[in-house]
Length: 253
Length: 381
Image (cartoon, rainbow over all chains, first blue to last red; front, side):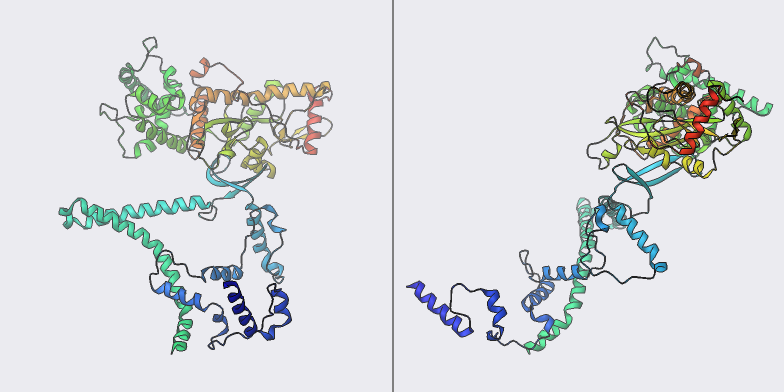
């Protein structure tokens, strides 16, 4: 009984929307053959680029402006990420040495004058070639060099060894970068802690609690450095979404 | 090169420092009584520090300024401050005994942290003030002497040095990200030391810090010695003219793991070689032996780099190795009596077989053939 009722309802719906009355619809065929039969519901005259993800944009806006809870995940976040991917200009697809011959998904750039671009191209190729090498930082002593002691980066790929200059962060691996960042944070933390402790001599009576407070402040500060990045991102998003907000508010009116 | 040259005034100062040193040793040896075994003769200064008192005094004078410039006050466990001689003695003991930090600390009556800091300060000081003991010969006279001494070994003319490499073994942490790079062909973790040696077993060029995974030829190619020689800025002195017109440039000798180059002569490879080539190889081997012996002596005297080092700081280790090389040269320059006590061995890298490098320069190959013929007496002078 229930099934006959539901099927009737479905038939009516199909009929009202102009869909063929069958349980096995070849949707692709249908869409390609008779697009004119579909009559989508009328929508407010919004700009085209906001049309497809109204709900997502609004929820984004709301999530940016208000605390929506830990489980809340805006729908359009992933879409934004994919947009960034398409727009990125430098794309290191692979760390293999074959990266140079791998087909690029981007259209090939226009040929530049050789004199202007050759150095850049060589550097890029070197960087790509070296990306296949493992890196080891070494301290080398060579008494034939006037400054007999130097730090180098040794690149290795099987039996091929290349020696590179240690150029600060550029040649430091990500792990080391993170470690350095943490070290710096720790140092800053310590310095700040020391400052606060010395400045807050008038709070000495609070003793242990004061110390805890300082540590808590430092934790907060560390967190802030990350939060700052996030808030910077939010600001950007707010700026990006401001026109949309205006449009939506107009629509609302 | 010898540091004891100069006026009577200098000699007087030397005499005074020697007396002061004797006083220091008389006092200092009492501190060591508890640490020494009863059978050990306390007067055997050399058995503890591996250098004679003369060399010890010279080293103290060499590193005095940089070591005493810093204000850090090192103390023994009884609270007494360490003098310069105490610090040098401690560092020499650490480098030469191969004992652990705690072992050396117990021996001297101090803590291991002090041993570590004093040793590092000494390493920096000897680098700063002693590097002139380790340099490529700069005068024509020096080069001529070296060539003459090499020729006296087994007749190789125009030879300026012998090159060899050794492995400084390490035990690394399994969590070390770069652990594979240090794994050498004998499955040991090691750091490579490449040296060019003169006929007196003095190091003339040192390259170290490269990981054990690299082969000898790769380390050579990365060295500045290679670049200079390739450019003709080294080993570019007087050429030897053979009777039929061939010219042999200055060169060094090395084992088969190195490439055959116009300035680096390696032995003939393969079996059943003709007599001329076999004879050449014998002469070549005898000449090259000085480098092997120098490295064997280095590791024998400065035992810190002899065994397997426990998780060393890989950035500091090359500098410790260099300090040991400088001390090795100082002993030769001072004509140290302690050297007479040492037995000569050729083994510095036990278990490591010679590598074979296929790279051979055509001109070098022709020159080597001419040299082999010349040495066999088939080419008249």
